[in-house]
Amino acid sequence: MKNFISPNTHLSSFFTGSTVEAMIKKSKELGTGYCVCTDNGYLTNIVKGYNKAKKESLKFIAGCELYFVDKECDIIKGTKAEQIRYYTITVHAKTQDAYQFLVKKISEKSRPKIDILDQEYPTFNWADLQEFSMKDFTIVLGGPQDIVCKNLLVDEAIVGAKIFNKLKNMFGQNLYASIIPIEFDKKWESSSIFTFTNGQTVTLDSSLMAETNIA
Image (cartoon, rainbow, N blue to C red; front, side, top):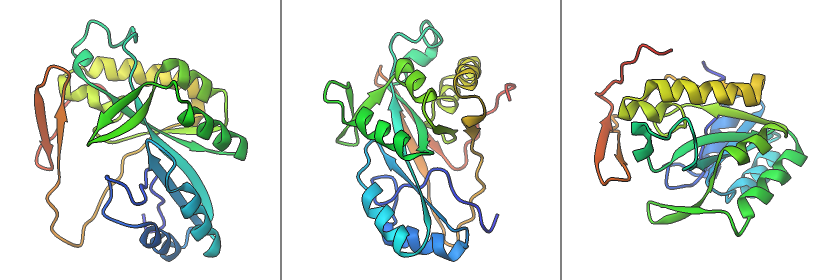
């Protein structure tokens, strides 16, 4: 695991306590020759990350964690998953053309938005993901917010499995599931608070585990 590159590395956002400079330095220390930048909702850090990675002779992998909302999704309709406000799904561009497509999609002024942590983010639906599947992207699943795993919070493992199968049919070998072991050298207290559309909240901390018979 020494030279592992995280497929979901946020540089300087609400979701990291690090900086672009620190991430580049760590990527250099790992000796992989690569640096991943997975921006959150937008592409704020891509250019800065690219320029700094280039100075360190690192190959740059540009991506974004997108927010998924589709009220017309037949898989979700009529299930407890309807109360989930949004999901996330991570995309990484494999080519310059794919990156330009990502920039265009995120920049569309007519795209629906959602407020999270006092910030507005563009949202994407199944029709958008179908377009992404026809371009050169890798899709990464992993984490309690993602489009598959988040369904476990409302006891809808079957919904998660159906969504995974739909994504697999769309993206084939470009779909990846991320399971990342994390080792900390300091004591950290981690928790996530999820608020559903009906106002109910669920706190998921490091001592809680979700059990399911769906793998």
